Image 1 (cartoon, helix red, strand yellow):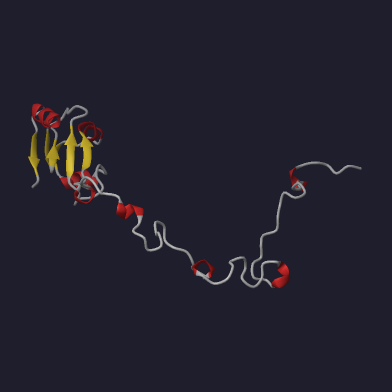
Image 2: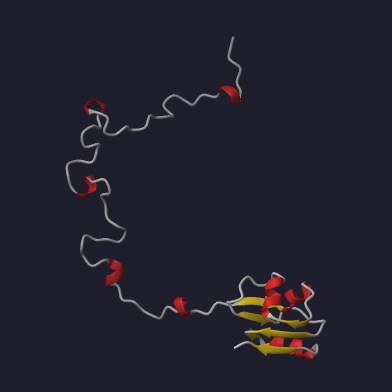
Length: 152
């Protein structure tokens, strides 16, 4: 009677699975003594090898090539950007300060400057106190009867 097939009695094909190499387990294993690392030298040591880019003491390629341009990343000013539609969605009106934006969840940190951009419309009077504001956002806030004050 043939064994019933199913997921409960799957067997891998013959030769599909190999036993792992057990290094340094005696001469008769075929990989004893030096465990396939040859004799002596840097690569035979426990943490043998060199860091990426190391060229044996020769000046590495990364240092040989000329460097061009200016990298501004370390000096870049990071902003927390808000659109007017976000202020409308949260229903903010009247005096809006940084702490109000933090409390409403629109910004994550108090010490990172905030900039307001002009996407969306303003229906209520907003007296906003932020670090920066786009021209279009400022115009929309002022047209609605509000004031934009800049934090220095």
